[in-house]
Length: 471
Image (tube, rainbow, N blue to C red; front, side, top):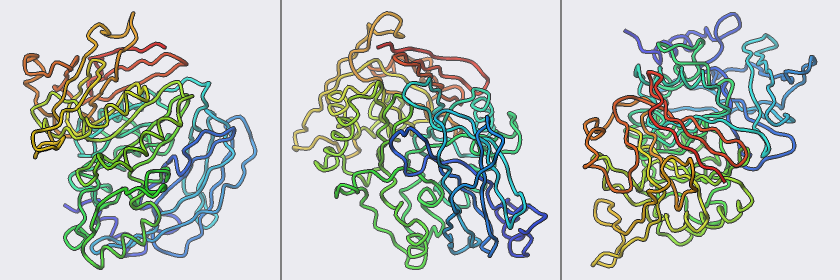
């Protein structure tokens, strides 16, 4: 049976992506774009993929409260070509002059013919309540992934954050075609289909090991699609002269084509920060090619968080959890070394994925130990140290947390890890408060002024954890 990718290839090769048939390789979806800071007027980026032809595209939009349509910016396009992948264009257009938090409508035209229309919602201001959904390790084309997507749609979040491992197994163009867009940009919502999320709210993501560790374009010519299909802030450490990746790309033809299509997003977009509502987010690439003991990188994190001192909430997000009780990936602890920086900056919550279940720590403070060989990391990534867990915090009903809360929300769709440990608390580390591994799930977070509330909701609709922080 032909895969969706082969069907698309046949249609495009036959020239059927023309007026009167579906003109999209992938339908429009919203992105934050290179817009890290809030504005009195907001902007998002609308993207779509289409055939590599001479069609002329345009976009109109209007507020849900208005009747007159106005023209958006002029779409730009970048040709994506890779051996074995049908050459196509990735389009981007700025949707500017949006009222914070307000719903808007947009229309996409191909050669003056209406090709697509949907609604969207502008980024919210610091005075507006915010709901976001968070789940990692998701794009596996499973029943659990589709069920989670449907429940997220019902929750009506303002945006979705993915802390890595966006598509399996290798972050390739072909995998996005089969395991990401069809589920998160489905035509209808349902537990069997997924939901039309991407077209109406922005997804924001950190790269995981399945997204960005492949660098051999001779073997994987459509690798590193993260840098082709996402549009996020470009204000990371590379913008200050600090290194942002130690990738060495191989495979001459594929490498050249990838760099041409990725443009300024590679490698800068792997680390960035942004504001949404009254929260500041610092997003880090935690993959093993990064050296987070590098003083220049640590200083970028420190300065980014210090610049957000007026934000009510400070969040950090990356893929590999520093504090994790699962037997799976237990020694991938290198991000623990940034814990003192997070504590110094009064970070409230650190979100991660990588481990395919849900875990919540008590509020923690951590001091790393230097090993006898003079290093802080063991050969497998172990980071030994002393932690102090605030076990009086509980679920936040009566007490403010003394330390940083670490969340693992990596049950977005891929196969689950360590299900037996859920009923074996003796196997948990002493910093772990909650451990749920028997269902795919997502985190629903509501921020209303100085109140933060998280609910962990499973694919069957059960709330298996909840806690709040009040400032």
